[in-house]
Length: 230
Image (cartoon, rainbow, N blue to C red; front, side, top):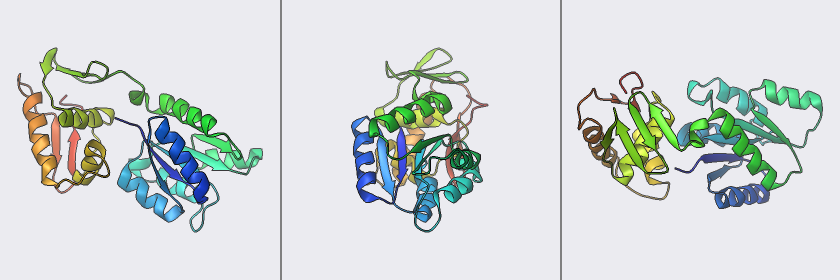
């Protein structure tokens, strides 16, 4: 599953250059141009990392960073701040606001991609791993294989993507809309009930050899992988 990057940059030409470079490097990149849209998009899209310009119309990038850090779902999402401010005091302000890294303009897109990879390796090691594990569940991403208590779990492509998403963020509750977006893609139009069908298939495959149900249904909210039951 491609790492998802949210780019928040009001200079449209720069935003498109960054989107192009990240997509070329295998990321799923989306763009918004102001702070208010960034707050909404971060909650809706659940990105793996946010690239955030400091100087934005309306709500500043610094304020966006601080607000995101106050939201439980966003607390651990890496944020890289972009800015023309290169003074030490400005860098300290950005890091104190909750940013994980700080890139001063002008910069090369290749450098930014490298910075993003480095931050993801440090903060989201699951994205760089070839194997995910949670309790008795083990997912080999290279061999496209899943086992539970050493027994093979036979999954279709969609069920595999759903389980990968759950295993990357155990106990995180995903709404049906978020699961559709992450497992099917932004431009695929499927009904919400399709998610329920594939969750049932995933549950059946995971429970084929016995054991407790590890997929938790949160009424009115969505689904999560119960790390304690896995």
